[in-house]
Amino acid sequence: MSVSIHNVDHLPWWRRPIPLLFLMAAGMPIAFSTWSALLNNFVIEVAQFDGADIGLLHTIREIPGFLAVAVIYLLIFMREQTLAWVSLLLLGAATAVTAYFPQMAGIMTITLLSSIGFHYYETINQSLQLQWIEKAKAPETLGWMMGAASAATLVAYVGIVLTWDAFNLTYSFVYMVAGCTTAGIALFCWLAFPRFEGPTVQRKEMVLRKRYWLYYALQFMAGARRQIFVVFAGFMMVERFGYSVDDLTLLYTVNLVLNMIAAPLIGKAVSRFGERRSLLFEYAGLVLVFLAYGGIYAFGWGVVVAAVLYVLDHLFFALKLALKTYFQKIADPADIAPTAAVAFTINHIAAVFLPVLLGVMWLWSPMWVFVLAALMALTSFGLALLIPRDPIPGRETIFQRNVTVPV
Image (cartoon, rainbow, N blue to C red; front, side):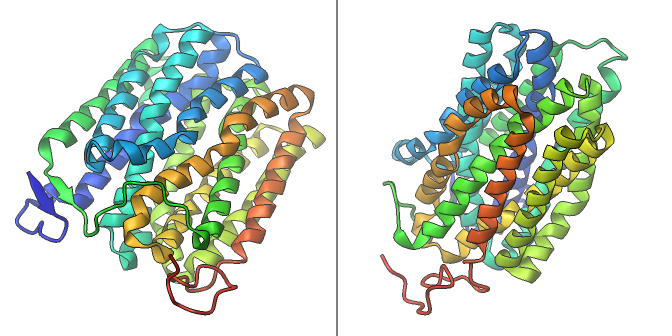
């Protein structure tokens, strides 16, 4: 059954578009965050990975993100909603069987499959959010969705902390439970919700527009910077400070509790102060955090400093929703789906080669890996200065004064 996004009042509240977005937002991180929480311990303890190996693994994991532009062509054959559910199902299924392939080749293959599910889901999810949520309500609604995702992940992490040692759990059991839960949520969404028709028919071809250049540049820098944190921050906690599974999961749990509280507030802050100020604050904070990460190796700072930085890092990254709403404000409504795919590809250009190169650098000097991340955050800060206070089509940067939308 197909229902217009503007004609959903006859549906029960829980079968409407926004609850669907919330449910999917909660379902995805159950598998993905559990996979991430156990990954560093799993590959070190079971597969004896070193820094170069983990860099290679994350390079493989990011290939589907680099190829996210293929989503545009998949949309010729299926609806965005359907592709979101299929991708979520693939993520769950691949996560469920992760521990059954403990050798490098197996880990790489399963990681690639789960990554296809994750990245294609995230591409479509971003598109649906920007199409279905009103501009005026977008920052706060996205903040609440981030909070819902954190709450769902918190349940999984608390379960790991409380039961890992108490019941002598195995990687295979935890991965299976998390993956099957996400897959079950995907199937429920498929069966319980109607197919919603967005307000604007989306283009089914690649869209690259000159007036979006600043958004593309910010996406590229965000992807490069994020890889350093995703790949090496958690790895540092295990390799340098000997964090166990429950230690690392407890740290993740602290992050989640703070994000549950902070995400809705961050959404309100973006709505009040605008995308320009919000992104400048994020990037300035990340410069300091990454420099402090480097200080751990330069000055021998201890585990408490590392844990505090890890938490601050997550809080600053929550401001990334401002980049979504910046694009929503400047976009042609028909460009949202194809540009979401193009942006994901741009975001992952550096991700394909950066982890493996920095994995080699890590063996030489971990400090310089984080110094490089600080320089990337500083570059993002410079780019964010070009965002106007009130971006609209035709005024995408501070250099434009007109409001005529170029094609």
